[in-house]
Image 1: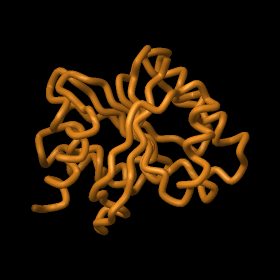
Image 2 (image 1 turned 90 degrees about the vertical axis):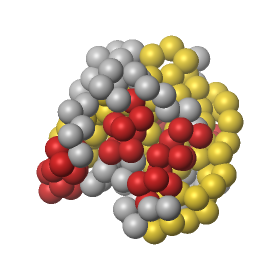
Image 3 (image 1 turned 45 degrees about the horizontal axis):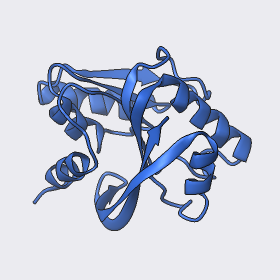
Length: 174
């Protein structure tokens, strides 16, 4: 298997489906964005949000080469507001972004989770790969009004190249 096939399998296993609207927060160069776009298909959409213009450009080239017209880039400057309408997202991916390296203050992580809550539809899934915050992420997310639905243990891709055993926490709004 290649990395993209591994990611496709993971995303299908944790609940991504055709037609959904996905927010990939801190998408980087698209390790999870491109496979998510394949899964949600033409009737779905993936918002790729990142503060790094270079990686967003790389991602959009990948999506274009793969003829994926359902990826929309959202450039941020590190602010904690997500430029999407209230209740517009079925699934939010927070893979290796919700930790003290990017958001060193608990208040900043809480503000981010409040924004994710705002943009998520009722009963939306929030998928979290809590790399570097395995001990505290669950509690912080539950305090932000999400409830833990399930846990997925398996092979994850880290930094666009490394396969690692890890856990995805599957939360639900509501």
